[in-house]
Length: 355
Image 1 (cartoon, one colour):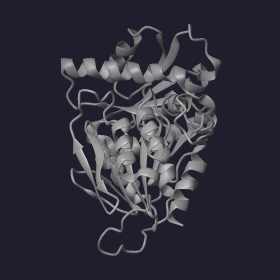
Image 2 (cartoon, one colour; image 1 turned 135 degrees about the vertical axis):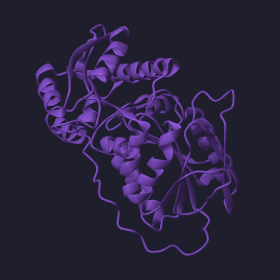
Image 3 (cartoon, one colour; image 1 turned 45 degrees about the horizontal axis):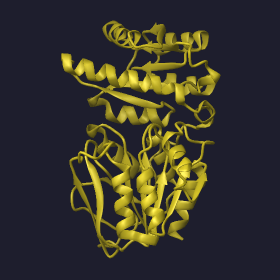
Image 4 (tube, one colour; image 1 turned 120 degrees about the horizontal axis):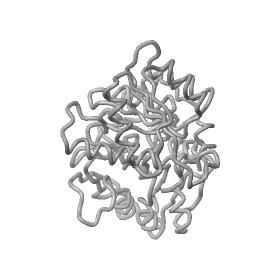
């Protein structure tokens, strides 16, 4: 819970945006939500930092492009002085900036359409309210101990030989809120000659998954791409499910491919980690490794159960490091986890798959 906050107390929010129009709109959207109180508004990073230290809000919505002090500088200073949940509100055209902010410690983001129609406003408000209210369930200790990631590009690995070697292990990863930073930490540690193939279901808007895959690829020695239907999976390759789609692994370990398509009526989450992990269990059996990282809800529990039943292994991020313990916690409570480990230990374990 947020600093031991009483669940009955309103969640106090600081709205930061250099546009008076946006500040007013965001404040109005959130002030009508039950349990939310607008504690203050700021027009630039300097004012935001002063108000954050003075008001100590429970959460902050943040625009990144501001005069005097931009959102990135604000995040660096805020996270060193007073770690606070930050939800970035950004346009679709600023995808790279969003991921840079997540690496600096922002918790999550909301994509703002360039032109707000009435339907867009309703959807934006619903998403903003959901992500702000999620703050009540955060593990603030985990947020406070997260370190900003090294934003430098990874040194390029030696050129790969033509063709894909079959993976010795198939790793399915499920993640949601807090997942982009967790995945970045994991993938920065993987060796170039990993003998594992990786498939990922990260809950994220569709216009952002390709940019996120490219960013992971730049910082990892394994090859990371947004998956397309019938892409092949081999050792040292990672495929990220596109947003608003679901992905399954098909074939055999010697010839693995992904099937990407629309969600089915039974899919409770999109992308569906349950469906992805269950497919990993079917094709890889005892060579399947499921990983459930930070995120809201319980996506991945059924898929993890399938992996264990097939003789595989399931790792869940422990409460010690998971910013949102919903998904890994649900798997632990369901008894479908082989081990619960802090994120660095999970990254180290996956790195040894290349040994």
